[in-house]
Image (cartoon, rainbow, N blue to C red):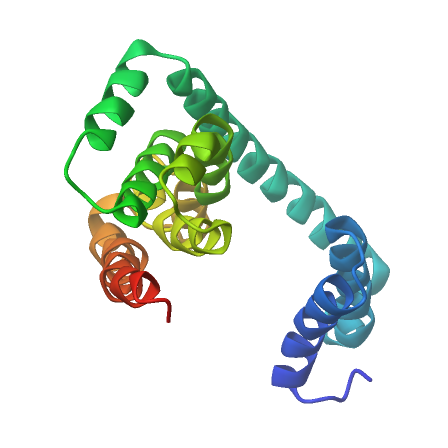
Length: 206
């Protein structure tokens, strides 16, 4: 199996993870573990040094993942604190009182939460926990709340303080000054444009 083309050995573990998680309904942890095992088997012969070098790779991976987990936990925890502040309540009330459509309100509220958390998943968690009843009371169908929220969470979550972005820049040995413009275009501007297109279509029931 070590003689398979590089692109196959790179893509196959990811495909297996997606199939196990989405198709066979495995847990996230089990699916990812199976993908890691498969990647190790497929790529074992490509790493010179044998088992000893693989131990070094796993040690480095564990250390790098620890930093990523801590960065994300810190900013999500910060977002949870922000959720309970008077300023956050006032901000959401101000947005709610604006003359905007319910789906635009969902998008803005989730984006604000994602920005405060520095995390798309954390922002969605905070927004849905704090505002789900408001979203439903405004007459937005649950499936559209989810879709709009998922897109909106991928906008302001990529502000400069985002934990995943800081980790990415550290791994790539780049600074915010060098890379942030490109990151902002792909991870803030393009999702925002997607919302501008999607919300009118969703309002028409498409």
